[in-house]
Image (cartoon, rainbow, N blue to C red; front, side, top):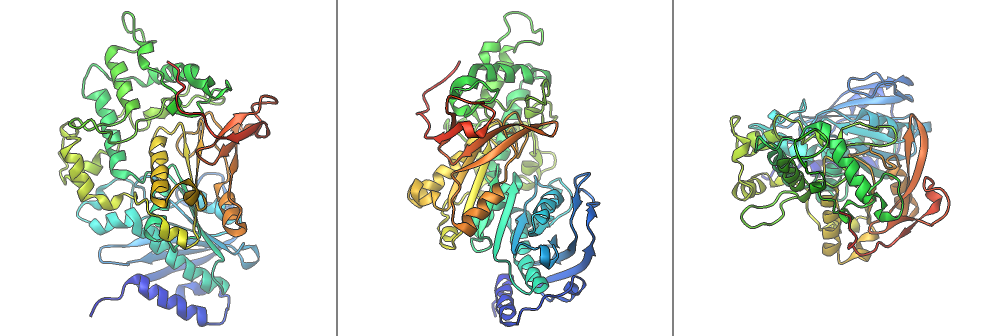
Length: 520
């Protein structure tokens, strides 16, 4: 006899519960809830006050809630832990918000959960099925890799809906997912693999092209460190960034320290080539060549085909009103690192060889092997028709100064979806992209980088009002000093010609000019 899947059992359970008269339970009684392959380990009424949980952001407080700890084992060699936070019935907005993770970390996003809870959402977050932040958890455990790649969020979502039904006596009216980085990857995975899980999804700076992102890290690191003569010291990153901004800041008609669209910026690092000896204020010839490679992106050495988008001009260092002289940017994943970021992806998951030498990677043969072997860790399906048919709405955003996941890769995915779905009109009625000038990875940077994508999504789902723009703000020392509209791609924000360029009201969303402008 064929085994019954966890999903099928959950559906049966949902049907049974829907036939039971609504009756709100108590927090403590949730431990008695019976769900296939799942144990509610504890359910504790938590009073309002400081959020004193391991890994929670310092200084944060939360309203009163019921904290539910759950363990699920949907398949052999899988153990997924997650938490569900439930506000009191009188404070619940009737909706559910699932939250995402970062990198390969098992850390639950307590900060995101606290923000959702404060707005009245029932919310949940998972450990993605493992402990720790390195990639050793996947060695010899392919099901744990699948948990991280896509299954943990789905299991968390299904179970959370049942817990919500038991606690409040009714299902959530709407279910949303909100994640950035790996959370953005998870968001797109949900839309692609489990289109019925959520009514609305926010996908921020998604690392969904995971295998080629790992190859991009490797390629950029090798550009700097394969040749001993080309290492680029972190101290030179602000030098490059200032030159880039000086050359390209005004392309959008406003001098504000922000590059609106790095694809229009053609600054050549050769402009900083040392005329004599290297005194720290110029780039050596090998450094110029390495920076050009990082901008251009990884290419197949045999065919010349582009493997992955390059890192954008303007992402080299994070220099803004409150970060003058700061570095950041490429130092996190490229510059000054003893080995390529996430090298263990290839070392442990692809080649199963802890002694593998990164310098031996073949960007033709080895990448093709990785694409075949690890395809499950990507979320690249452009056919979102099932999600659209379900009535789902998808808001994606990406920082134009992202030094971790190149923003051009996000644009390419969105445009590929448009082709699959039959054009822009057939896509924009359920999926919209918002590019964020001057924003780094999931926040930060000199541009307006604080905005409420979930509120825009909720209005789209619950009121059928599609977001044409989202207002973003930038703050220095806690005080807002700039606002700007984020426009639905491909539209861009342009100054009307009068009024402060620091006020969103003085900008309009317009269609961009053809990408022919450049600055050298």
